[in-house]
Amino acid sequence: MARVRCSVQEIELTNEDDHDVESVMATCSRCKHTTESFGTSEASVRRCLVLMREECPRKENNFYVDDAEVK
Image (cartoon, rainbow, N blue to C red):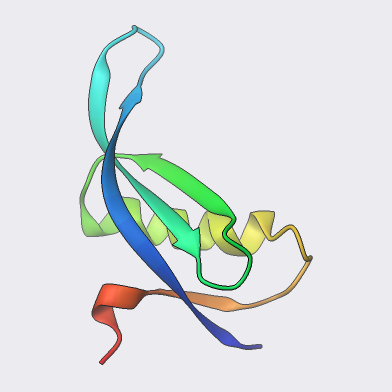
């Protein structure tokens, strides 16, 4: 299992009630696949990173990390 960095940025998503909600989007540094989650908390970022693993288009089993948190 490789450790793969993802860039995380704040975006706005439209919810089912047609309201704009502050959200986050993670982008894989390897393949540029993206995932999105409502909210801007650490939990929302973690959800994006977990979704990245579940949705990997290359079917890889990686550990995804927020690029801003890597030292």
